[in-house]
Length: 138
Image 1 (cartoon, rainbow, N blue to C red):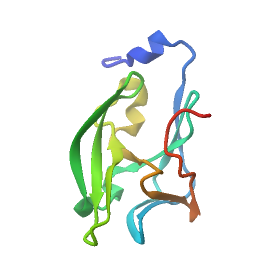
Image 2: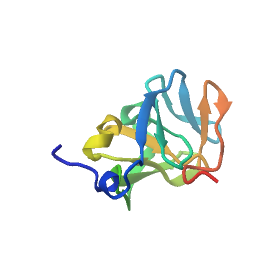
Image 3: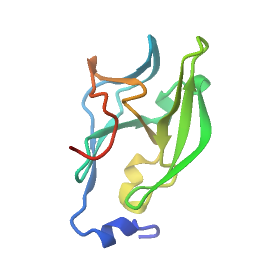
Image 4: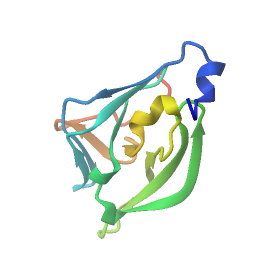
């Protein structure tokens, strides 16, 4: 591997897997659909709630802007963030993140983005996903 994730060596048994989502994933801010995809995936990570990702190109590029926010995951890599701003003035800051150059073990999310479900409404085949946002399972 050219760019292995250090987290897996430090935490044996930790798992990150990505599975195709056999449904339509749509993301809404208020009444506005900001993204929709039939090519979404579900990322399952040890002790975390499921997180859904879709190709970055399936997001309305005209309403998102990259921010200076950057976070790090020892399993996936460095994440960059985007804010959604609608012409109506509605805004969701740092609501979207993406791993532009993920570690080798998570290359299948390169070019994909995810959403904070506590900042936008995420729907899977029309059903509203849990609003708690990603993070540790309780």
